[in-house]
Length: 362
Image (cartoon, rainbow, N blue to C red; front, side, top):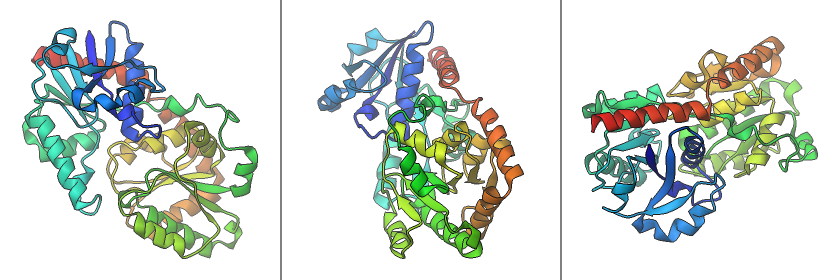
């Protein structure tokens, strides 16, 4: 099967979750028996070709030429909310989340543009099949676009991409880790829908209740996003026990996961929730919310499940995971088992099945 995978999202050094998905899926598809894969970019992104060709996944990058490229492939996959019009071969579209439909999760302008992009991909791009990255996302998609009933397939991500960075392999040094350990770790964009402000308040509540946790730190890893102003206001209230680290390389991120006492991710809305899976792979007890896809990904392996709107529940969950050794041990062992159920090779295999259905449906 000849596959055209749109890889425009690989033109950044600092990859988003979508970029990680595109790169890891592309690499796994390249290793799949019977698949001939090329990364493609639309003509309007011609200036990005050189940057995309330097992607760390070794994926080839070619321009998609209307009419001519149709003849070279059996399926076109738009993994980043976009599909071109006029492509005459069967098409597959991946939808990662519809968080922009929920008020307060993004700016009104971003929500408007995102909805227009998705509606264009569906109406003009006319995909044969749609991939949703979780059952939660599938429900959201069908609720907003009921005409897709029967054409949406759930394909979970893999999660082992950070494990190749062994301890000490160019990441955060042992002395750096020692300077902030023990610590609660958060990884993700610093934005409203991730509930970072709520996590900061819960962390301070925990510290006020437990003088024996006086040395505990909160480490926030990620780039500022929508609503960062409120997070900055929380940080401005003082406290040397909160460490804002910004974006980190994969090697540094792996080291930070390894050194964490607890991973906290009380997000309001996630289409999948990569960091929850990554933390479980490194044997870190996880606190997350029962909203959207997080509990689906973590299953019964999560250490603490909380209502993201309750500062009290988040603080109590952190206290449990920090103080209950039996709970921590269970969370670590069950988390590793759950992590083993998410592999990029499985993601690629299930994606190929979707391709076959798309070709059959065409």
